[in-house]
Image (cartoon, rainbow, N blue to C red; front, side):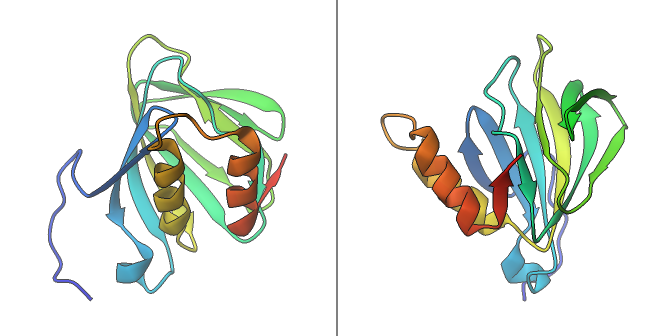
Length: 147
């Protein structure tokens, strides 16, 4: 357990993938695996996560800045500053920033998923982007299925 402290915007355990930068405020190591929490900066017109569903995790999004297009079970929805979206376990979803400015989200996974994002960061840190199949294999290891 670490000493409690305030973590400022943009700070935390930093990982990146698909052009997004994720600053983890809470990770499994500190929450006993109960949840992870990240501040995610999503670039304009960037690559979206493949549509997927979590079989062992719930996910929640709070839009901090900008506009995010969420697709939940095939239905597009626009989230703007201070909007909240709960993605129940098993619901198919993806999201992206269709705007011209970066957007920021607070993203909660329960139980924690920071291990997945650390491995995703490693895939995307290579000289060439990973093949879609590599991402699908990683996602499957962490309880995500194609939606």
